[in-house]
Length: 136
Image (tube, rainbow, N blue to C red; front, top):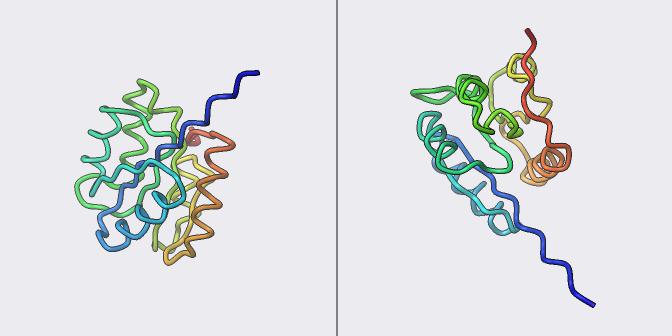
């Protein structure tokens, strides 16, 4: 009887300009078995997306150079598979629900957040695999 191959760990691209928070999130995700890549802004995130697609992108909304919503829009424009990657928005902006609606993602979490809530949301995004679908 052959054994099934072990499941490949999910890759998470964390895009956040807050170094302290991103470091904590990356450490927790790695400890939970995720493969983690980190970008400090949307431009860096776009380059990492072009190099290799993750299973999910966890991104801040407000960042220098290219915001989270702008990065999400570029992912749709570039296509090349980026348009199928689920996006999880995290932010302290007051209108996060509206920003998430404009981006077209059901996955969003207000800062400050509980790390268990974040893990639950990431796992949900990975299970459902719903890519952003902005309203027209």
